[in-house]
Structure formats: structure tokens, C-alpha cells
Length: 344
Ligand code: NAD
Ligand code: ZN
Ligand code: ZN
Image (cartoon, rainbow, N blue to C red; front, top):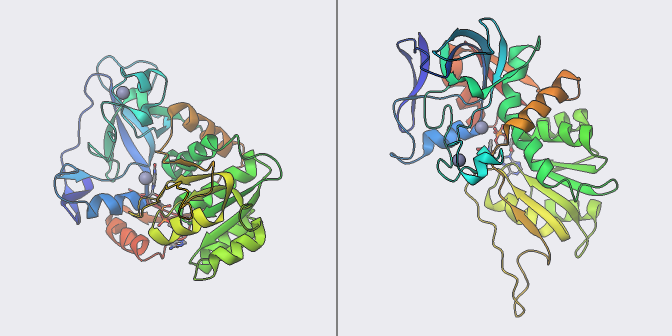
């Protein structure tokens, strides 16, 4: 079968690979669609040794069940499914509570992260990772598994502060951020302020229901403060889907006293937390800082339900498998709007 593999750190290429077979408890899927996540670029850019090579990338997968491995029951060939990408140990304190995204044994274990992912004609996954998606277009289903799930989980973590009448700043309206705006519209009554460097991304945010948009630049802190109030007031919640030094500086300067910053983006910035008396504090007092990772299987089921009810829809740009490397180049240059989805 054809597969798009990281064959060495930084090298992504199409190869001919043997079609895998489903082992005990596993299922062979015919891949229907795979989202191209910015994290794949971080994986490609990571130093040697952090991720296995060669490895097929792709952790946002939807497809149809092809063959069942030994011992698998409850699924049939032809079932249309989305794949929950995390594979926790299943036995630690976190996994037993359903928080496989906090697994204490395999902290970033998953499909397309520590074993072959979905950028191929077929992929083998544990049957326990499958969720039904019904008749939904698979190119719509794939982005739900990360671009939808990760913001949904972040919003869940901020739920206590996202009361009617509060404000939420969303930084980075790309694959994750444009889904975050929709999750906020569908599940809260907060004022949404979208921030991005790209005008096209801000147009998308407005179309999806953001109340205000601010183009990121030297004056973005002042412009956001004009909307949410100056310190000690500010945004009740800031969702940062970039995570670079400039966006984290914006986040800590616009968050309200007692607010919450959720650092989702992995661009490598630092958020200093220093509540001292003799210097200005780096974050307002009583600020909660969280570093969410992906989400839970139960949350993914809710995300799929939100999509099936018509309240969550990825803005999708599709590419055939052979063009996956080009899609990632466009993503790197900031030229994808919404989510790029590869259709093998
Ligand atoms: P993306 O490339 O689709 O979107 C990024 C958006 O940020 C783009 O619209 C871009 O214009 C905007 N942007 C870039 N620099 C900016 C700046 N300085 N100020 C304002 N906006 C800026 O990426 P994505 O796939 O949505 O992923 C976003 C980030 O989240 C990546 O770092 C990815 O690795 C990370 N991620 C984290 C998790 C997690 O569980 N923590 C899960 C998935 C992705
Ligand atoms: Zn991802
Ligand atoms: Zn575990």
C-alpha cells in the first residue's frame, strides 16, 4: 500500500509499505481521511530519537472497518469510524479514570506518534480506539479527533470560568482555533475575541461566530484590552493555540485577575509564572495556567455528537495522498485555512 512516512527526522516521503495485519484486539481500517495537524510539523522538526523512524504520520483518522483481528467483537466490516488517537497503558491511575491523555506510563503514546498513523491506504488500530460516526463525511469526521477534540477538552477545563457574560480570547484560528470558536458558540454564552496574524483566518472566525477579531501585531494587547477591559480586569479565559513567546506575552497581559490561560500550542514559547512582591507579577494574581493535552475518549464521543447535530463543522481543504507533503508545506507557510485533510 502507499504510505506517507517520516523516513528520517525532517524527511517526509511517499513509500510502498506492506499492508499491515490486525493482531489480537486490533482492527484493520481502510483510511477514509486524515487531518494534517501542525503537531506533525513539530514531530518532523523534533531531534532524532524522540519519535520512531520510519513512522507513518497522521493522528487524525477516520475510515471504514476492513478486517477484525483475533478476539475482536462488536465491530463489522464496513463500519464507519473515527479513531481516538491516544493509547494509554489502561492500568495507571489516570487511565483508570478515563484520562488516557494523562497516562503516567505512556505520556505521548498514540497512533501516528509512537506507532504508524493514518497517512496510508490502511492502518491498524486497537478496536478500543474506534467510535461510530454514522453517515458523516469521513473528511469531516477526521478533524474531529484532534482539531475538534483538543479545543473541546480545553473548553471543558475552563468551563467554570466560561459563564454567560464572560469573555474568551482565542489566539490562532487555524485547524484547532476555528473549531474552538465553534465549540464556544455551541456550548457557552461567552464573548469570543479571535486573534490571528492572518486576515483570512480572522474572516473565518467572524463567519463562525466570533464577536470581535484582532489582527496580531505590536498593538494587539491594547486592542484586546479595549474590548475586555484593562488590568486588573481582562479576559476570563485565554486559549492559546500558537504557544509562541509573542502569543504567550499577549495571553498573560490580557488575562483578568483570577482568569485562566490554557496553553495548547506547541510553538516552544515560555509562559513565566512569578508572583513576587518586589517586581510586577508576570501573571495576574489568582491566574490559573493549564497545559491541556488532546482529550478523552468520552469527550470525543461528545465532539462527534456536536458535529452530527450540525453545530461543529471543520472548514476542510482536501488533498490526495500523494500531495500530503505539499499540504504540510502549505501548513508550514500558514497558507491552509481551517484544516487540510488528506484523502487516500
Ligand atoms: P495551524 O497551523 O492550523 O494554525 C495555527 C494558526 O495560528 C494559524 O491560523 C496562524 O496564522 C496562527 N498564528 C501563527 N502565529 C501566530 C501569532 N504569532 N499570533 C497569532 N496567530 C498566529 O495549527 P493547528 O494544527 O491548529 O495547531 C496549533 C498548535 O497546537 C500547534 O502548535 C500544534 O502542535 C498544537 N497542538 C497541540 C495539541 C495539544 O494537545 N496540546 C493538540 C493538537 C495540536
Ligand atoms: Zn494533532
Ligand atoms: Zn496509563
